[in-house]
Length: 215
Image 1: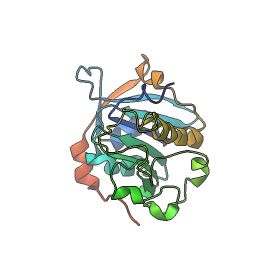
Image 2 (image 1 turned 90 degrees about the horizontal axis):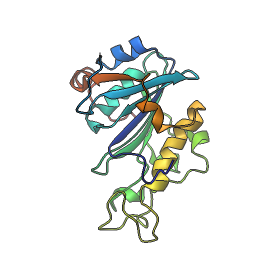
Image 3 (image 1 turned 180 degrees about the horizontal axis):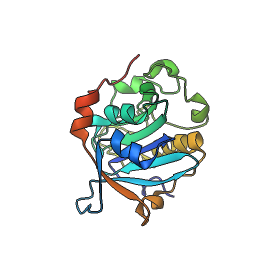
Image 4 (image 1 turned 90 degrees about the vertical axis):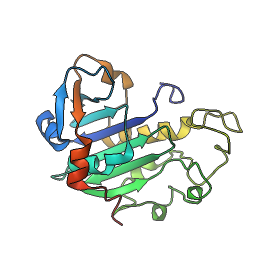
């Protein structure tokens, strides 16, 4: 896979362990559907090695925290990587309804670029170092504006000719691969055996609110 061109914007990929379809539908306040002409349904791929993957191509940060908390109830582990066309992005890991780690893998402005995700003290969550073993060797853009100067937009080439989004997006997906032991394959979400869900984002937000992160 060419991570510089193949991954869409916006993009939200979630891995959740030890969850069946019935529980998944209930947790997300979702309704199964066979009709997705607008392309707004969440796509659920068949489980692999105890992990279920959920892809949302119209993702919004509006209820993202609520979704993660809902899915991670009852000691389940959840990892979500997210980005949108406005430059919002995050990696979040939760267990048992509690966010352990959250950080932005790429920073697009001088204010936030002072943070370095390689330093646990610059992350949010109850256990900022919880996924450190899965971050080893991965490259993120946080802490540097060298690869995204004024005038660049996601997907364009930076000063050194390297696509701005390629490295950090690939690193985000690698975290999920390492955590689950399953190689990522975007094509899995476009096979006949997937399930389509219409998530009630408003209901999730109303129930869980948006407690961005405990610290």
